[in-house]
Amino acid sequence: MILCAWHETPAQDRAVLEKNILNALDDLYTALRPHLEADIRQARADNYTAPAPETFSDTPEPHGTGLPLFGWRLIHPVSPASVWDDMLDVALWNSSIVLDDWLDEYAHIDEVSIDGFIDLLRRHGIPAVLCAGCEKPITSRHPRWPGIWTTPSDEYGGPACPGPGTGPHPPAPLIGWYTDSDFGAPHQPR
Ligand SMILES: [Zn+2]
Image (cartoon, rainbow, N blue to C red; front, top):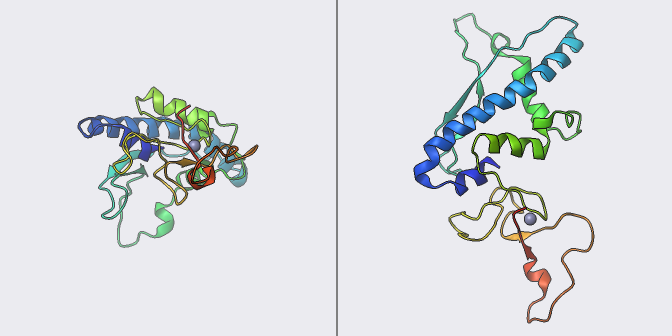
């Protein structure tokens, strides 16, 4: 979703977008934090309090998407006696589990739902767009597909929409040399 928003934003506005993304990440962690703390307190039977990480962005990977790396981090003082466990904060570690919620265990957190996350991004001026058909993030400003709504981010990405996953798809064929299934249907912003 962030990658699509990056494409949607003209180059001269990306410094502002970067700040907006960091602010949105701040808000997202603020929303997750009480849930993370509650889980850890229950598991450890103590009064654990999660530290507040700072958001950061870093140089894009050399052969990656061109998108800066975004994340949360805690800075620790280190000494020769420091060990890995001194640096490990379980709430920050678990935040990735909450965001990658394939068991829907955290679906009750508004900001983790797709609509809640979209609202969070838009509140921060981040141009997040989902497809009405497949609900994937889409952009119409991908450099290889300008003006075409496309999903740039995974191996099934591209201009053809896989549809909502229910009902007949692709739709009934129309008359043509090639069949509709050769092309599918385009993504549409919802
Ligand atoms: Zn789609």
